[in-house]
Length: 324
Image (cartoon, rainbow, N blue to C red; front, top):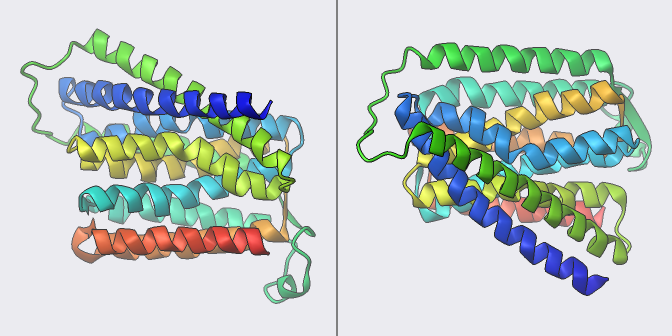
């Protein structure tokens, strides 16, 4: 059984890499054909596609009542997107960050994250959390809060679409792949990414459980990393192809999608109870978000040094998750 899981893990990785390559090409071609900025494509189509594994895992977890996985998967995925996806991508090439990302998109998911922190920690007083056990219940993300998140997400997407029509993106269409073929490439890419992500998560969970890891730790680490591999592979491939706006947009857009849509759907299906460990993770996510936002504001880019700091921060976060 262990050998079968390892083989499935390798097949999943291959599907992720190949799917991301096809997906980036197809998305870029569509952006050029319709004169839509690559950033907008990254924040919408690419972000939605690469977040398909998170959507599947968190929704199924909510239906099955696995609250710890539903919430920790979203938190862990966002930590991975911010620190590892952007951090590793910046090691290949300095990532320029558009003004609209700094002024609009970063504040959007930071505010959404703080909202979830307040709702999830509603039953925990600021100083009382220090005397509580990690597995004690802290609060509840209700259906009302979930619907509010989804409504805000829909408004955000509509705003992006309307705003992009006023952007005169200079794109080269000569020699570009036809739109129908590009759409087919996007569909094939999404299928490979989603399938590969599910294969990786399924096999990784089985391997992790064989070593006796807890559900919260599995959700924050193995599942979160597994479902975020599409974002990592897509952003690295996009960076190497020179589509740095697509890489940044993908990571930031995925975080917005995770917090507002995936968590929204999951908590609408079944209100998700949080524990003290989740509150600590949400606090860390908020602090990390502010750090990466600060890096982005500075010179409107993320360089190799800042990327290295981000990768180290992720490693420390995972050590804390394992040791607590």
